[in-house]
Structure formats: structure tokens, C-alpha cells
Amino acid sequence: MASGQSAVDSKSGVTLYDEGNLWAKSIAHVGVERIVILGLKSKPKSVKVKGEELVWSWETGVEAGGKVEGTASRLTIKNPRLGIIDAWEVIIE
View 1 (cartoon, helix red, strand yellow):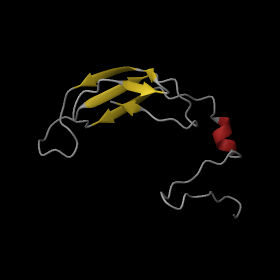
View 2: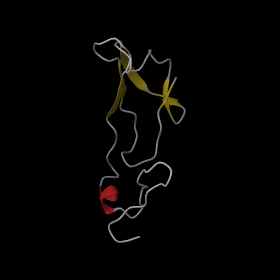
View 3: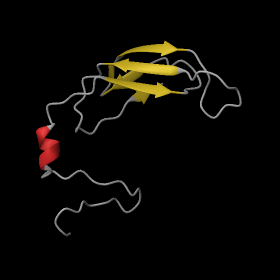
View 4: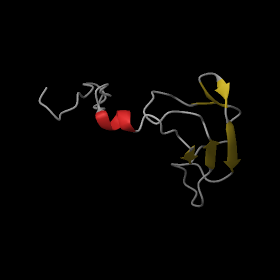
């Protein structure tokens, strides 16, 4: 691969993380402050990362893709204690 180019996953088209990325290393200390998800159909029963329940709030509203207009529902996850460059997933049930 030529200098300055990143590897891309052939199925998803997503750029793969490069362990040697100096910029990513320089921000490795940065954490995710909050995650906001709009347009969910209903209030979750549980929101977890790595099996641990997170602190979150819910505002009822309109679901994405619905035929009703209005303010979207809003799930706000507060301080999920995740690194900005780490691989993670949020499980919403």
C-alpha cells in the first residue's frame, strides 16, 4: 500500500484502523462524553457496554422513518467511559 493510504475492508468499505496512525495515538487519551441516538421506536429497557449497564435518559418522541412528523425520540447515554479510538459497541434492548 502506498504511503498515506489506509486499508479498506472489502465487504463494508470501512477504513480499517492502523495501529501506526500517529494522529490516533495523539488522541488516545480522549474519551466519549455522551452518545445521542435519535428516532428510536420505543424506550429501551437496558443500555449496556461490555455487559455493564450505563447511565442514560430518554425523551419520548417520533420514531425515525415513521409517517408522523415531530421531534424525534432521544436516547442520551451519559459518560459511557469509552475511548474515542477503541473498538466498542452499545447494546440497546
